[in-house]
Image (cartoon, rainbow, N blue to C red; front, top):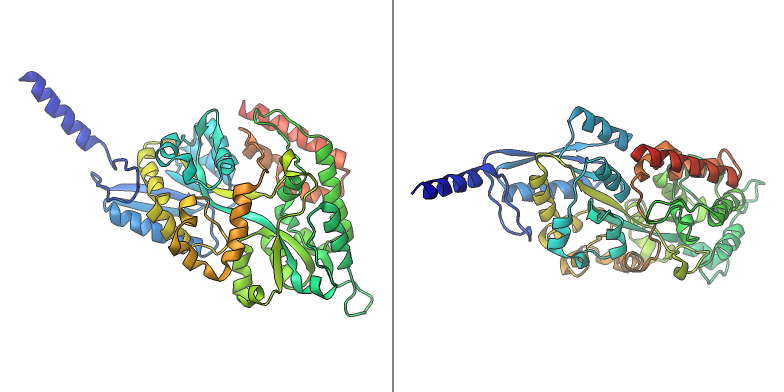
Length: 441
């Protein structure tokens, strides 16, 4: 009799002690005991992501009526704000941040918690690219998953190419340079150059990863050993050459959105940016720019073959779970987010051009119908995500390295504004990496 009483007590404790119960598929309603608050910090502010995100939150709350999701926009130095919040014990429960390096680094600091259980529940094939999912893995654990992905492509003014009789889109660095040089010209014959072959987003470091990816320029291996060398010098030299000889000079002040506006305004014949540029074109030029053949897209030109690990950058914003008292609830939110229902709801309403890193969405008729006007462009992006060999390992100390001077904007500025020798820049990067490694160890 006494054993039965204890069993009843234990069952009662288990039933009342847990909040939201785990559900693998994310499609069923979930019951909670007592009111719970889930705090989300989100760095992605560009419309219509917030609208699509809030639709997801509303549906999650409908299925979990005792859960309230509070969203805060996170701006500025993200890494420092997370570290400050960790010290003050004011961290949120879940974060949407810029990349895998963030959640991996914070995982080494016991800030984020692994999501191995969720990856196992859905299976690795749930993600479109195993390479991309691998960016989130360190020491046998997945420290997050992709939120959205945005493969980079070469955008070019197809109408200008046609005017000059250029029928071959550049596929190598040498071809890219030669084509870009042809568009450095004085079109109105007033003695001033008013058209260039290239625009860059130098102030935000865009698209330096694509220069590196096109040259298979890996800065460290999967164990964190530094591998800076001749390929890095080649990459920096080529960037400098393209900037000096073919690039719109005002690019030094451009961030990514700035270079897109410059491209639309006719400042350059080529540009490398993500597939999400379709959103800007639709807003400012309408869908006719695609239908009339004004612009074209192609893979980013390369200097090395795929066999050496070269390829386009297909970056991904990241979702991470904070290691705290609400991690179980946060994981249930993530389970719903990456369920078939959740992903369809989000990606059918999210930014045109921010592509799904999940296979199930690409197989969805709802998603294809929502993006039918530029499906061909999406399909090019999908192939880049699935096939690119550019797979730079994520280092434990990567977020610190980027914050302390190793970021793309720092490198682009060193080449184009400060005009430092490539060897000097490389040594600075090596010193910064070594310092970051010491900090994380």
